[in-house]
Image 1: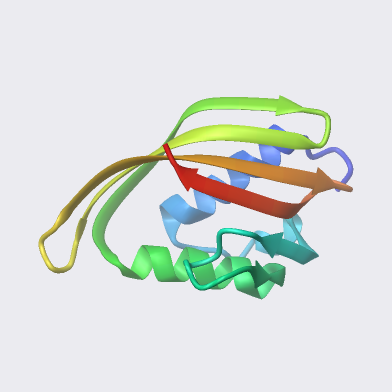
Image 2: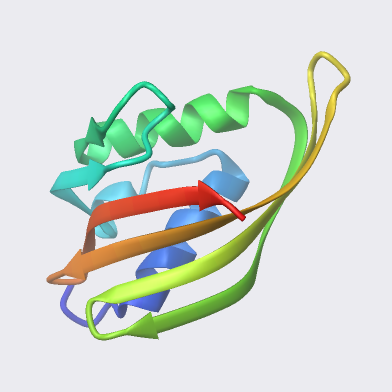
Length: 117
């Protein structure tokens, strides 16, 4: 796992959001992962917590495209500006950007912070 850079970990996490499939999360998310953003209800923890956020996001959309617009990685941190476009089941359209930061240890994400851009 040590070969994973912070930027590659963040790319893998975003790919799971894009696909809606968190089945490979344990390869890049640590058991003691802490998502400070969560689902707006407070922090979420662990691999299963990350998987819950991925599935909850994916289930809210009829169609969704997620792309990394900018990505910076240094040592144990990576930052990305991510664009989220899609259509919800209620017909509403989404086009928003977020800024997401992760901290990595031993090739896995251990913390995440996120905010709308």
